[in-house]
Image (cartoon, rainbow, N blue to C red; front, side, top):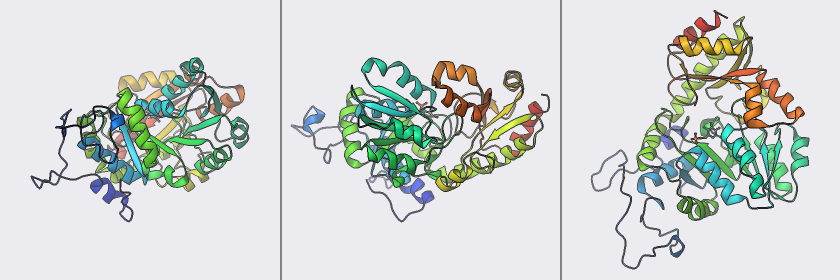
Length: 402
Ligand SMILES: *Cc1c(COP(=O)(O)O)cnc(C)c1O
């Protein structure tokens, strides 16, 4: 897949992977929904009998013209060699784990990452004899101590969902290399508008396409990006055989959403900065965490590693439960709902005790770091594309009542 070097992010968002139907001279890409494709006589029925270079479109679980266009576009945006798209972010993460990890291996994973990822490693991996070691990735000593010869994969997320703590990717790559471990990062919050982890030496970049990449809250998808060789193996060994393939319809929707990706990210960042500014000044708000604010504990790292601060922020108030109830009942512009990265502003309350019990299972030291960012509970907000003054007025109306 071409890396589209020399073209800007906006041009790549529009052009990469998009070829219209050549017989109609159409400019926009076609949506190809067919699940099967006419085969040459004698084509192998098994993927093992086919060379990647000339796998023709054969059956959509193996490959499909519309899905392939999305893969080329994503590789072009991430400046990665290749991409494999899945049905959801979790299908991509699970696929990566299945590809990389076997019994006896160690997985060193960020102590805070997307809840379902944390839960997979808590609940499924002990029975598979995979040794899971959780590490606060901001603590280089904790990381070094965890990295043994058995470590196969280091998995992190930056900014981490939900607390927006950052990981220094160059540092993690440098330490992981010493024990020949591979590094994966979930870059869903950062997006390629902010950070291109492949350029920093990360082996695998993972995305939930459901969020900023699609950007409109109406299609689920996931992706792994990395070397051509790894992606070919992931497609052969994992995607085709475990079947978490995306619908071509969703792939087309996500590709459509991507055309406006850089201008959307710019607006998300602008609006988030305005909302964060209001929150920092509001007397009933006790803490605001946003990578674009000088008050973020890792602001220097944010400036070094992120070209765009994205639209995710968190804040705390004295009585979070009461504020959450008021928001669910009274917000008009902002939606009280989970998920993120849409045109709609979304907000959700995450009480710390509950998150620690159900999902993260941390040591005392790790819990202390979690609480530095999250206190007793945070409102996680995905600042949308509505007019910033309307978002602010809606939120302020609730905060003024506290
Ligand atoms: C949403 C999310 C996922 C999971 O993606 P789905 O598309 O919902 O399966 C993984 N990581 C992060 C950071 C997310 O926000």
